[in-house]
Length: 417
Image 1 (cartoon, rainbow, N blue to C red):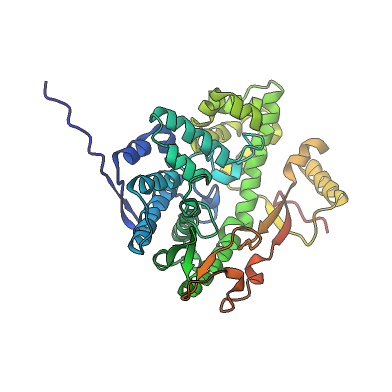
Image 2 (tube, helix red, strand yellow):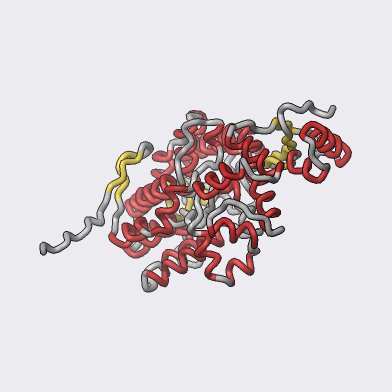
């Protein structure tokens, strides 16, 4: 019997954004092949945004590879400028950015706190990375230190998590491409070429000021045109409400169509302490993806519960709620009027009608100047925060917190005032 040929672990991915993306090491290949990472092929990057932008079907898998590719280029730039980065640190930084979103659940941010109670996706990512580190006999220890910010070379962590990191650079460019919102496109090549390290921290050369301003403008536009698009907000709040109702029914002991993983999490909805204490809950969570949720919702259309069936059917048929942005949050009296209108129209109790009046707050702060600022390196070697750069459009335009309360309700019913 002929020997089984060894697997070629130096693969290329043909990416529509950057062209060919290479997997630079066997260890990274093995991580990409791992079921934890392959699951990201089945997690949508933008939740239900494809209901508004038909091309937005890209996944967390795409994004993770793209962010790793930008990390490769960033390290090449820094080395060319004389910054010492060992081969081990290079690979670890690439692993850290590759796995930075591995803890996302179905539909990414849309269901972040629905299946788990107050458990952030970064917490899940850390747990997965530690489990992978055990499987890989400690070979991810340095990558975890970079991811968590405990590595002595702080700038490596800043390449993963800061106000101008490889994560943001990729998702802005990728999301703009797949949605077709060309105003959101950024010049990542220019920004990467301007990267430097001074006093141990990540900086950009001062001549990058115009590119930084364009980056901030693009981020602001993407928030309101894509991430906070009113129809996307309506669809994702409806999705959350479907899962909330299903969880309520499951906790009452009612039978629901769902896989073992989804059924368990709906019934238990574990909090942070429970999730981090019980390893089997991580096993369940890492077997969940978008298809589990969609297949359940399709079946729930015919469930005997009128709330669950109606909400599920509206999502599947794209009969989304109307959404209205408000100057101030909805008053209790106005909410009661809307619920009474829903109850009367749909033949529901006032309590059940509450599932058809959804409230939320859309918030955007493009640049958080109260956090770690983008630093600029002037020609004389001085490092200044972006807020002190007089050439840029006043940062108050970007650092202002924009808050917009909203309410969603069935489109066939009139507004109450």
